Length: 326
Image (tube, rainbow, N blue to C red):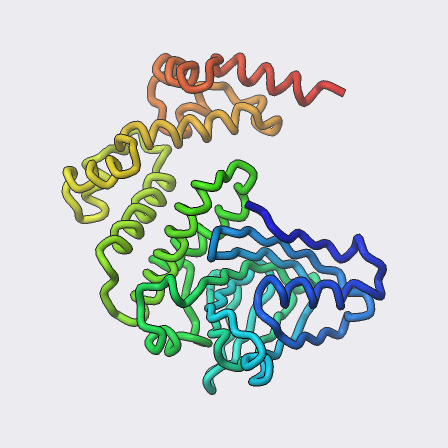
């Protein structure tokens, strides 16, 4: 569920920086902030609240952030704040360590201790990034061990780091349909993926439930990357993750779906989206279906009608009429 949404351009220029500072300090953690553009501070902040977990999407000019000892004593939410840049970079200094994380990299800080942060703009003069705020109490790892990772570089181009990064990106892109039950489940998955990233770098073992959640996310990501392969099936998925087909079936049974049903659902979702895309209007329906792994046009048409109550050509036609309507 979306919480705070702030666009400073909707405010008088003289109020922008103060309102942004107040809003983000309240939503994240109290800090002192300074910017060379305080006189006309143009920034946006979106907050996705998932129970105790929050995900913030921020666009802003360069900033300097200071969490002092006095601020720690005054207010400590006892959280970790993990960040990554879409554009620009973040620099974190804490525990006599300093790290700079650009795109495809992450870092986090411990709000219970002083730190200094810098938000660095890209060539456009602006920064865009995502911040995950997660309570220490919900993590299945000792706080002292997690603290050893603060202000260190956590790669996110591959492995579990990429899983967490892609998960956060997906979270903030598809918010309109989340129910209260969804937020509970998504919060748990987010905690497990953050814990998995930390456990990977600490070379430690996570509780079995967390390992299972992370394995499920890895499998989902693998399927997503290979949807276009008509041969994608249980045996290939199980082999790629070094588990038995029986174990794979058990993992999906816990989610209330079969492996084949999950693959078919993802393929249909992509076809449904592409058929409504004006930019793909000239592409034949059978080519769109084949791109997402449907080897048979007849099978695709039956599956599409069963899922959406309309034929593929009917869906495309209604989407074209909707776009053309003045």
